[in-house]
Length: 161
Image (cartoon, rainbow, N blue to C red; front, side):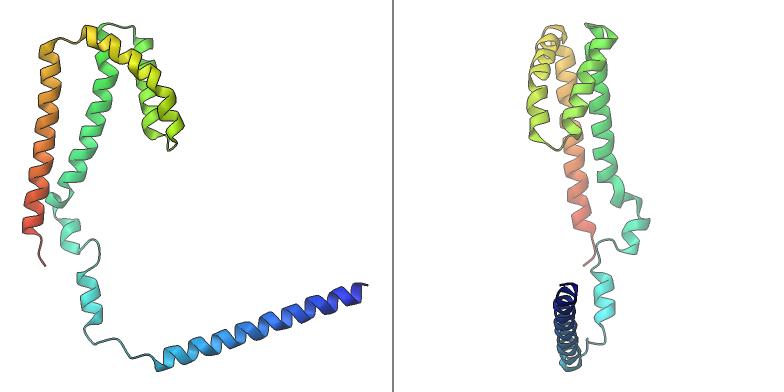
């Protein structure tokens, strides 16, 4: 019984080895028959890579990612600090924790489970936020959006081809 299984396994292994050998021969033939790369291929590939050396060294190329990161950090801080005026620090921390959990979770179910907490936080904030503070938050968001748009627009105009 064991000798039959060994013979079946050996036959299957021999067939796999033969198949791999044929595939290797086919690949060798394809490489041998393919045309060589043009002489300027390496230079063209280097100029079209995602981050050129000048982009890495140039600080203005990193303006948009830095602004986006700063905006997300400040928005998170604002969400944490805003409820402190009306709520206890523990409630503010709970709201902030629910928002961070919903933002960092990749599943939609986490976002839907945080919706009631967000709605409750919105109701509390709606009563405690003055119109001046609301305008300040909306104005800072508009300024951030305009600065990001202007930075993106200038960057595409200056990029070398």
